[in-house]
Picture 1 (cartoon, rainbow, N blue to C red):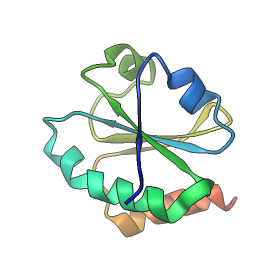
Picture 2: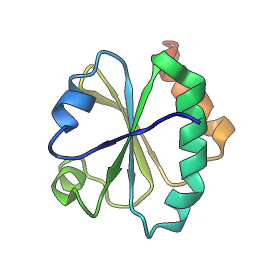
Picture 3: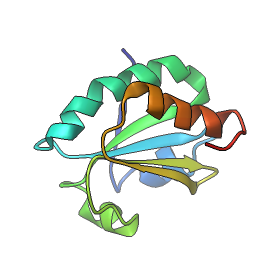
Picture 4: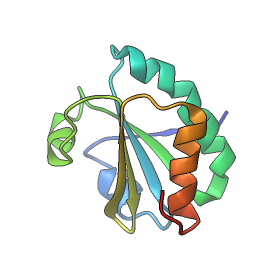
Amino acid sequence: MADLTFVSADNFQEEVLGADTPVLVDFYADWCGPCKALAPVIEELAGEFGDQLKVVKLDVDQNSELSMQYGVQSIPTMVLFKGGEEADRIVGFLPKGQLKEQLDAHLNGTSA
């Protein structure tokens, strides 16, 4: 399993918006059942994509300003950032295959 970075308002600019590679931000909460179910899938994908994709987690309860800024209204929500801009948004639990397919499309220049 990959080591995931946890981001907050303190390091979001540097870790996400200023990153050289695409970044998938997993907006989650500890009390969220679907978030817990998605966590191992996120970790597996982080390991599989390696240097192609940086995967970070953001606790919506501890970072409500960022959650509001990015319009996160339900969790889990995953937002893919490329060049500091939102490139895609996935709301809710998706099976690993579908999630990987959607990310592959962005990382390999095709559209999903």
